[in-house]
Image (cartoon, rainbow, N blue to C red; front, top):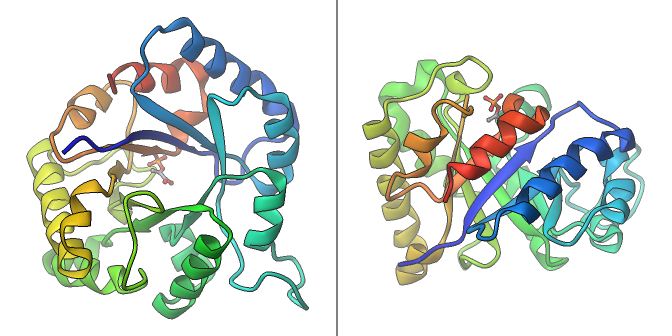
Amino acid sequence: MKRTNYIIANWKMNGTEKSVSLVKSIQKHILKKRKNSAKIVICPPFTALGGLIQKSKKIIKFGAQDVHHEHAGAFTGSISALMLNQLGVKFVIIGHSERRQYQKESIKELSKKINSALSKNLKVIFCIGETLDEIKKRSSILKKQLTSLPSKFTGNNIIIAYEPVWAIGTGKTPTIKEINSIHKSIRRMISNKIGKEASKVSILYGGSVNQNNSEDILNLSDVDGALVGGASLKSKDFCKIIDSSN
Ligand code: PEP
């Protein structure tokens, strides 16, 4: 089954509208290549989204790093799916481990966010992953996290990013063999929910992907791209990761 490949940049709390030069050099690189099988998505902070969307070509799509579950109301400091949609945002990261940890986002809360994003046609990049303490019970942790997903979803509206928390920003990754087998088991888990459609859902790997390990990771049969943090902030490194996805 041919699935869409994605290389997604998570800038976290880095970058402003002035980061347009970073976007432009990535854009130039993609345009120079004749063939680019992976879709490139950049997720800057909210404040940079509008400006960067306006100044970029359509080959790069933009995503937000979070969304509130309501569309409007008395929620100081929050941004809704309706607002993102009106800004031209196409994707949203939901359930990143940093938000689960620091904002204490619960399974139930994430479920509401996913439903809200889907109702405004945002493609959800849903992050799951175990902490170091949870490695031995990884399977049950991932299964539980996946319960935030609605009972029906498709490969068109949900992307799953498997990000072991202990691999994020640490330079450590599971072995290549482990990554592939975990991705296979995630697909089995979602097929219990959505049946055959599971074969169409892209499952990305995230956690210390860089220009040196990307080729091995991205060529795995069950890995459909990468969610990249640190290495997405340097054009040269990110472009190398993009190149290794073909
Ligand atoms: C992330 O935060 O989603 C991530 C994968 O970070 P890094 O690539 O820096 O490990």
